[in-house]
Image (cartoon, rainbow, N blue to C red; front, side, top):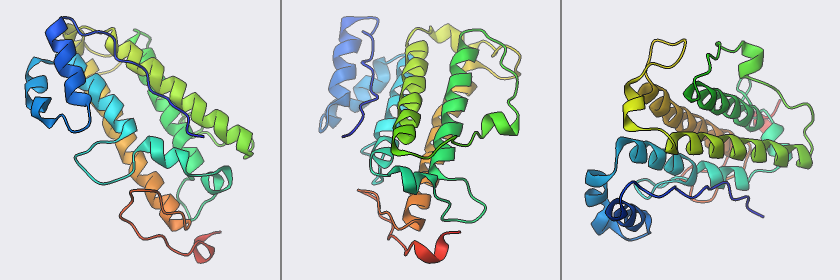
Amino acid sequence: MRTDYRVPRPAARDPLSRVIYWLSRRRGAKLFSHWAEDVMSEIDRIWDQLQRSFEGNDAWRCPSLRDLLACVGAADAAAHPIPGAPSVWELLLHTTVSETAARRRLAGEVVPTPSDEEAWPTPAETTPAAWLQAKLAFGEARRALRQAVAALSDERLAEPVPGREYTCYVLLHGVVEHALYHAGQIEMLMVAAGVRPAASSMAAHEATPLRR
């Protein structure tokens, strides 16, 4: 069963923006997309990119992070089909840590740079139940981050992140880029393990020669 991590976008600041925003998100409603970009605030655009980075985008043919996580089981998630590379599970835990840190920084907390062990945790156990909990934890971290973004004003984007030399704008765009970067790695690991995700254009390889 697919876990739904989505959170509804809070109402836009004026009724017209709200209507255009939702029309632009409907499949096939491309007529409204450019208009929506003109009336959406920068916060709305960033929130939209956070949503798309998880759910996918019609602009390219590739599985979304949500779809990737839905079709990989605990055993394949814990496997290391590419020597020296992290597992799918480790990538998910790392992304959860990063998005939790971003949400805390938006709240004004000075978050120190995590150690390698903190930034790249390993699963304590690799059971199906533990894999489900890891996916749910990521979903909660992403939901909390989107809610924090929705509460921001555009003016906050130009403010520096506490304890850092970059702005909230740079932080949030970095979160989107970071998630997409690791989603691509997850897809490649799955293909190397012999699992071909739905909508993937990559051909699956035999898993046995690649496993440790």
